[in-house]
Length: 84
Image 1 (cartoon, rainbow, N blue to C red):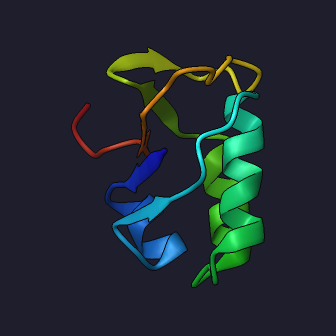
Image 2: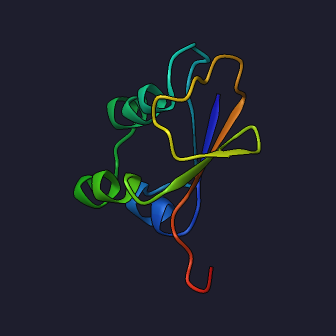
């Protein structure tokens, strides 16, 4: 599974993307796996930012960390953007 980070999320994590083994579970599990498998550039900022982000699961928008990622190939982490 590929997790891509945009704008402030990219700055907080310190990379454009992270590839994780594909596993069933929830969006929250995938985000926790980023913390467990990646040297996050700014852990406090990343943790705080997650509450304000929206996420695209193979292009479908959600803010629900309990959303299933079973069969999802790509997660986009979308922080709030200025202007909309």
